[in-house]
Length: 323
Image (cartoon, rainbow, N blue to C red):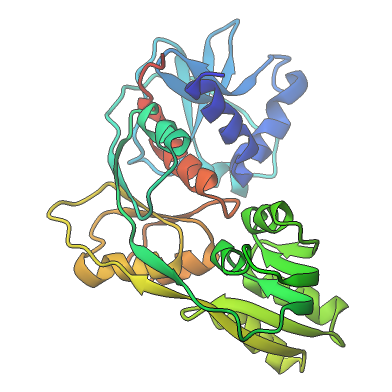
């Protein structure tokens, strides 16, 4: 599978509410009996919706200042807000538009080669550095047999993965944390997209149980505070330390990929956000970024790939040719 096809599939899985709503009108010939495809590669671009036979391209835009593409096809720009506000059947007209260039983003962690390619092959410049450093701590003093254990990050899992820990039920945040637990032979009883949602699940279904909470020194307060408020018994174990790896950059970036609140803190210690767009892995990271900028875009799912997809979707009008 080439990179452009991979990006197209990720974009289809990661559609916005406005895209989903418009697609309901377009699919199966719902608009003028025309057959549309979504997130479809055309030459150097990936367009939101296209009718191949009549060369009709429909593009959702965030605002009038959004970058545009250059194409010989007829193109209709549709503001996101007009889709979400309308309850009536859609009426579409056609116009043409011209293009612009993509930007350069800073990744606040070193990416895998496959992840880099999603950006680079989309014509997006990339600079990367590790905004934080993780120090795994000695866990020999923690009881190795646990009935219920909470993990809100992969780093907490890494702290025990080479140990003799036996855990009956794991409760975790994020699909990647779940995957790492299962790869190490642990059973995941519950999973949530963020710590607050996981706390709500525990409060609703496991309030009488006791838990061990494996976390870092800079962990967020939402989960322990909610559990304490509802008198759910838990013991907190700090199993890793997060250290800010601050660095001063002598340039600005069009976008910054943030994968944790600590990464945001690390970057702003030495740099101003300025006009950079913060692409954030989740709402807790976005909350931290919003302290320094109003230009925040949150991934639909808390994975590195979906953060990258958010950036690709924003800059996708300038996709370069793939090999």
